[in-house]
Length: 286
Length: 339
Image (cartoon, rainbow over all chains, first blue to last red; front, side, top):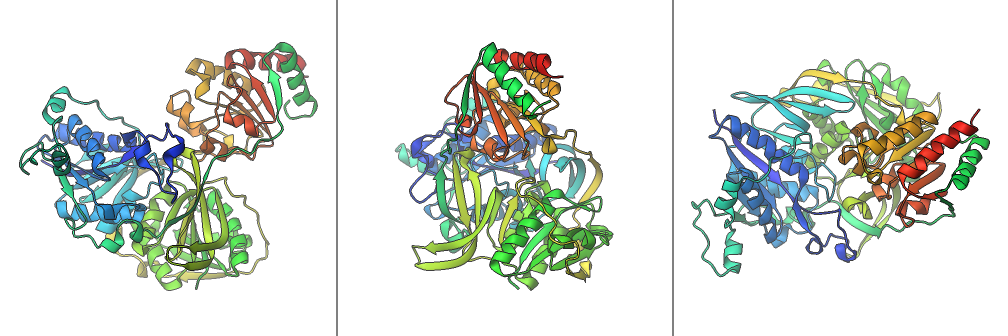
């Protein structure tokens, strides 16, 4: 048995390290100012695909990401862990996309890849926390979705059975191929594999090859990372990027805390006892 | 036409808390917009739902009652909403930011090409000026949410596309019955006209739902720990203090991610929202997502060794010191002085 899988990955700004120049004047994120990482739950998605490949070694994993040129880093990162192929969806016209325009572009690329059994992505990305792109891609492709998947329980010839989180519990759900899964962080991704690291460290997109003054790799070379534009995936440009995004950012406020009068208490017996007694006397506690 | 719709989440033939909260919020937004409030119930054996929700001020309740619609799976529920919305043309649709709402909302918004904003913490009606196209839009729904790791608060609008869709977490809005005798209409639809057998692609083999293991949401006192607590062992101090003063234990996302405590104790935008009379924040720096889940607490005490921790800005009492030193003192003085 072999399976054809597509893993959706996003390069995200590491929101744990945000500086002052993180936002542009138009309210969109200035990604260039932040360290970029492989979205953590997308790595978990890759892990689920790798577990299927462990079991059925002739299965293939194609990693698909949309972003600027430097998002090719997540493709290499995926290859180092066992993915077979990487595709970067990149075009100026994709810029400023909300979740709907993003899912449209990804769905177009997936149609071009074609013939898949499973699409697996992270439940959500740490920069937006919306969890919308997975279900929207499934809708655009007209295939069923199972979100909040914790683990794959079993995989058959035509179907997959997963354990997924539901409000207040878990359920076991079965769906026929083709289908889309989004996964939670329940199972972490394996580390890079030294052999794959050696094999793929020189993998480049044609854009990267050109920037280094090199000939691009031929398409059948394992080091070739595909680079697809709006035209390559046959997308309607109006449905891409800002123009394809029904949501608009009206305003962005940096967080400024409203200071209120607070009482400072030092860490000594007298001040802490006074506080506890005060809370007891006014019936806040006890 | 152009009414405000709330999707009702139903478990065990009961309407979820979050849906009731959204009905109250929806009623007040509908009043401001001068439109009607409509609710959609999709499931099986829904005869009691009208009695449960119309008192919130629901003008029209849409019922889709069919054995195939429970337990919840995405596609039949999505098809029903999509087809109903094509007929009814709502201007706004609200859903809980639960697992169901976050699974269903994007599917529906994609099919209708409408904008959806996840996990809103505030919904307001206002105007929007599109400077680039020199157009003004009246009475849009401002969908306000923290974004980008909680470093910003964004106001999102959907100027052109309808419905304007938003999900809201449980506990963010307050529920209140409007009128026990409110007169609303019930429309019983033939569910099968709104979905096809192709929508029944997912088979649920087994389901385990447990009642919430803790009483955090309704607790009058919460003692919460953050990453600054430092270790699982130190977190036992937090638990001891909570036990001693009859409080529930909560945590920030960072503490949960660090493995100090289980996920169901997480307070904040991506966890539970609490409104206790006393909130004791231990080793919590005060990211906006955490504040979103506790800022309506009546009294806030913070314990931090950093005197400049952002959370101190909303504190009534700021204790500067380490958890290991301050918490045991509080426990022993409580024991000495109570009774």
